[in-house]
Image 1 (tube, rainbow, N blue to C red):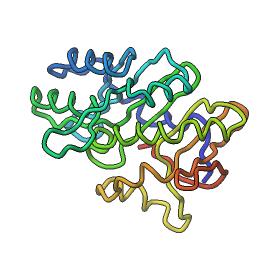
Image 2: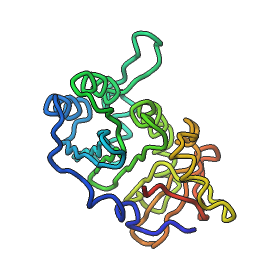
Image 3: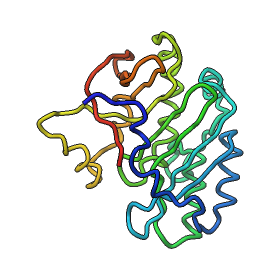
Length: 223
């Protein structure tokens, strides 16, 4: 199945609560605005009963090449380390930990989007807590691959969608089933990304392992 333009927003957008009643939300937003140099909009997407599923949108003044430079310099989403494991964590992860302490319902991030001046980057949840756990690693992958994508493209993509999946036409529901049962894993963020360009209807695919762009049939998350 080719990935058609604008399919990212076709489903749950109408279910968003634009004024979620979440304790500590103002402080949480200010932390994200400080560490990601962006204006931040936060909405609640009610997909799982009483749980809080956040849609986080960063409106950034930077372009894609500016973002790459800030990532290289360690300025954007300043890198932190877990005090117990020493592993890298994102400001989002640590801020969500503090936010969760103030609220009883489980808080997760359904979608994390960065709206740059010339490109939108959309990151989807693929298993519970996946975005907050992997955002530091996704930013590192963006640091490694953005310049390769820019050099390999005719022009800068106007949207990067993370991740997309290989589609098996005989098992169309397997990907969604795995997501619902939390069977997806970390590596799924680092196989394929979808790239949209304003001169074509369907997405191109960026293969992170091969560091190359191709056209093909893949599956994108739209739940």
